[in-house]
View (cartoon, rainbow over the protein chains, first blue to last red):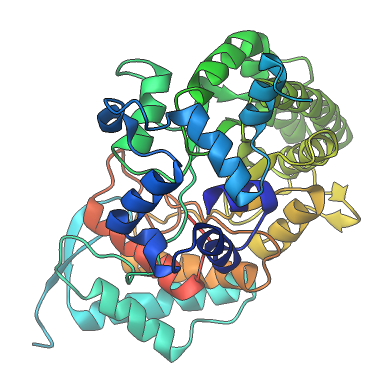
Length: 90
Length: 345
């Protein structure tokens, strides 16, 4: 929701509905740390990596932000720069 | 029961004891003085009753209902005294559950940061590789920094007592040009380094010229970075007319309250607006919260962009204390969110 507010200027109810829709969860689930732990893991959106980094399949910050940008259909500045600097961008 | 004393806080954070009737009287007075001063409607009976419910409680902590959580943004994250600044950001994200974080230089001024932008860019790049939540960069417009003897323009605070009003105004207008150039330079640099957004914090601290500089910088940054987050947090509820004649988009800035401040911020290109209402340390927390809600309510009702109210020490009903008590912080936060339906804090 923070990303939609910061980048798109979305008011909170709109941001919650938008993100919930993209994640396939209810608005109430967004504030449920138990549900979101599972959802973030399933979608590769990054968990608290100081405990998760022991699992090589878990995405770390930059990797997670690639997925977040794609899922939310919102540009993430550092992801775009990563693409450019690594030659991934067309 | 009516005379039972309830532990509650004063605006300076000190503990005091009041009856429910005394708290109710403070809430009524807080909304009344705010309505008179800001020329806005007072809170209605249901809102007054809800405030009493929150404050006439001895509980150590309180919070919004499940499902009513809001997004948190910050004006600087971490103490910068433990580990590195990147550790601060990671701690807020991973241990405090922050929705966003903000990198900042200890000299929280765009003018000061301008001289160290390459070093700040390096930290931003490293931080972005380690943080998942949105990561902003923040500083203050801090217009007073541009005055002599430390800055390039004559000091309007020394000119005005001498009756040199025209000279004082000219100095402020010149300072605005310097400040806008510095803010745009810093924002360009930090966005180039990967920042998700920039935060113009404590805008208007030096009055209407300070606010004008922030608005013009926002407009320029928005034009150069269409997808960047741009947050502006105010210094106080009322824009002081240190100049008096400055306008933005045909609107006189001196004397603006949060609703009009928000409209200009949105017009300039901000994506988040942070109203600030200062705390009266000699009044109770209940009085201060009622006053803050009354002043900001029209702003949220007409908001065109998300409103993240400033709720830190000395603003938003939170005590003016270095370590505001959690009972007071949670009460002011909950009350603001419950009644104002804020987008964030």
